[in-house]
Image (cartoon, rainbow, N blue to C red; front, side, top):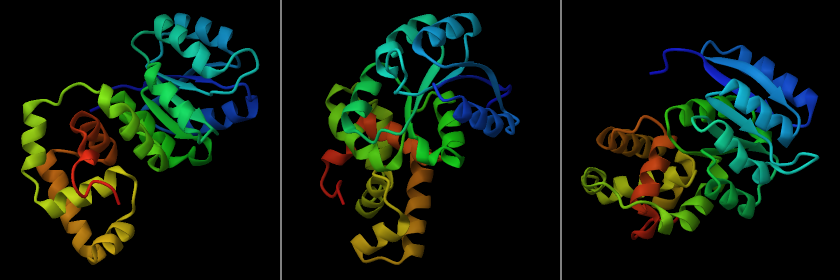
Length: 226
């Protein structure tokens, strides 16, 4: 549980967007915007001086893009969790961001409740990916993931086949209605499977399921793709 406000640094070249984000985040009791930067050079300076907990990073900036400056930000503030906030739904950007050390990837069009959830998820050392892009990350990065712990495998094996199918659908970002339609179930039944499976896995939200999926490679199993 978070016991103090998360110190957040905003990096985006649009002042109006930064002002909107400051208002959004400032309204949360567990978040505090401690600084802003409009380009890569300023971002590195602010990160060095402020040592934020969370760094919201745009990919498109005037002097150099976010991907180029990301490694320097990691060096400047090694404990900061970097969350990409971008308009780009490009798979190449997503892949490179995570390979460069990003902890999450959120689209600007979803910069409200989802952004708040993403910030809290990466603060808990979880991985957060915009639902529509989760499959790209899992399929592309799973071969590079660390071997799963034995306890993770045992938890997954404790699920029934139907529970596994429902969990795989959730990880991929499908709604309960879509999962129900795929497996010819009622939405209520899907909710039951989902609740029971998440309890067995010890997962409280989708972000934790994605983290588990990255370790286990569950999409490579039968029935893993809707």
